[in-house]
Length: 265
Length: 279
Image (tube, rainbow over all chains, first blue to last red):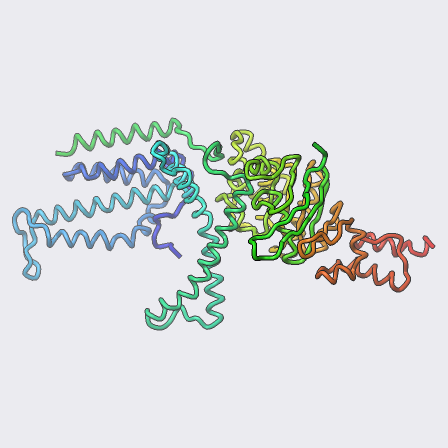
């Protein structure tokens, strides 16, 4: 169903990237997203691109799969490129397209912005490709832990995320069941003008919402019956540990950053 | 302090003031290591009893004691540590993203150490024969398997009392058999009290005692064997006895008097083939 978009799809392999602590991956990607804006010449962009491609190779996921997953994003990247081509007015005019002057600065700017965009998407999709949603949830809970001091409901947020993840397939199955039930009563989801089709979704959404609320209520009762009383005094089965591998990852990423600052102008 | 695990003293309950009583002056007690089945048709108040024991709702009148502790808003967390519950809908009580995480949920709530948690998870999953599915997500399990995981989740916290609140009602016949054998095994191997709430009389045959509910009151309290003789009365309150019991009752009417009320097919067969020898 969502095969064309790989962001959010986990692909299990036995790579080192998979074995990294999810927190390590989140921090590195967060820093990467910030520091990519420091790149300002071909060399520094090339250096970061090298890092991104090397990471992609290290995941042991087939590059073809990753490339195919990025297909919907290509459109955006090309769109950004063309936009910059016509809007930026720097450097000498190189040539004209249908009366519009194209500046040399525009081509450089277009390339830079598109590449930056591409790298951002590639690296973030590597994150979700190599980390299960539940690991990401745990990592977020652990990283946001300091915010507890200012009464930010970190545990509740994480629990909400993990329960949502757990119920996605259940609600999908339910949606399918309801849509079949409604189709058998004559609701037409697939043909007719857009307006009618949007209208046809209403008898799908209403029962889905009703049952979701009912589920929520029963789940809350079951959780209470199993002794759930908030995050206080709770232990956790899933635990995150920063291992040697994570330190190696941090160290190599620091080298990447040092390299970036040496190469940029 | 007494040896009663659960005691209801003149308990009445209704969901709000305008409505009729869901439970009306109900008193009973359950002793240690006893298996009690509570049966009744829909709306007879049987599920309300389960929620009252666990402090999910509180009685309007009367008192409830669980293992000597009076159930009130203050003691409710102590009570819940001793009571495990399995509900009707297999999907709506599965909290974790995998089987392992779900069994862990109750342990996490109680602040059990991680190493101890892993031990208990493995042991309780083995007890319900679900060890092979430890990493499975809930949507890859059948209803019966999900309920077995729910039972494992309850076993893991080692409660004194387990309540199965219509745990088989939403399952297919295969899932139902699975759960009944699992429950039977668990009861054999663990020292605990068991309350099974159901409207299916086929599920009460292993119970030590049966409490029959009707319109918020206890209709009768007896053994499964004795209960099956009261076919007429049960039919009046909307309950149907198993086929074997019916057959035995019909035979009795034809003056084929059996020595005891058979509870399953084997007992009936034994009664029949020894019939002439006993004469």
